[in-house]
Length: 168
Image (cartoon, rainbow, N blue to C red; front, side, top):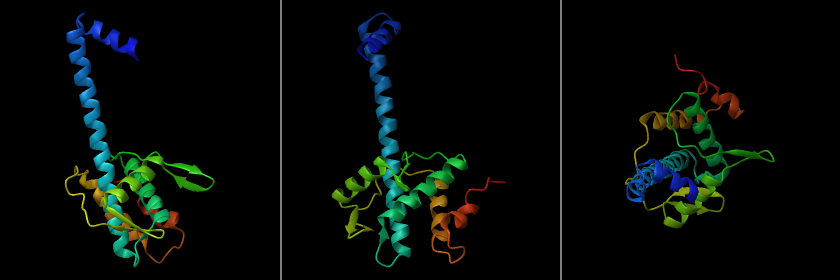
């Protein structure tokens, strides 16, 4: 990595000062984009848990939160909506995302979410200061919530088939 940075500095004008400035700007923009995507993820998780807790009596079970966010991510990817991914993986028949697990732990420790047994509830703090996601992402969350507790069909992947259709 140091050799790569030295080559960048030489290519940016031959001077370490000029190359260092260019590297600093590039690193700063990279960090800002990472911070923005982290804030968007936190906002999406907070919105999703709040919506799921509204329709569930005692809060949203954690496994349903994983499944719900996976569905929202898949729908956004399918429709070409800008969505910061959670890097889901299937392990032993279960969805797993280390990004989502870490984020849930952080949000619980910050007081944004409460964990009661195996259910998540919105906490006292709100996530209003975070970056606002694309309105289409919030629309996908709303449509997914609307179909979440429908009675027919019982199989959830069949029930969410309408969300995966290509827009007209």
